[in-house]
Image 1: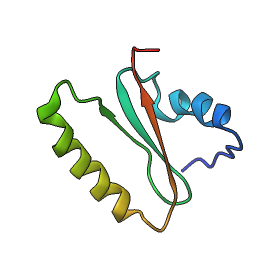
Image 2: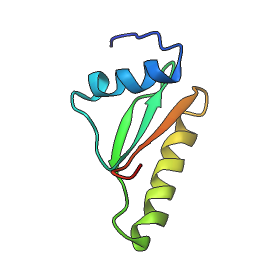
Image 3: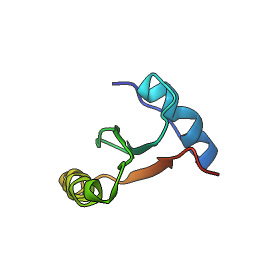
Image 4: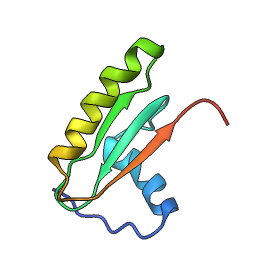
Length: 78
């Protein structure tokens, strides 16, 4: 596994496409620090998808609670 040193928010944003292998769009990205993994999921398309997404992500983050994570939201909106 490759180790990166990310010191600033801009470092994190610049590293995400490199980590994932593509530039995410309409996505939530969880960047794992330490031993936590990095994951990307599609943004919910409607309100019925929000709760299952929240449950899945919170379960994953709790599983890796010993390591900090950074959550980044990519949307088409400015």
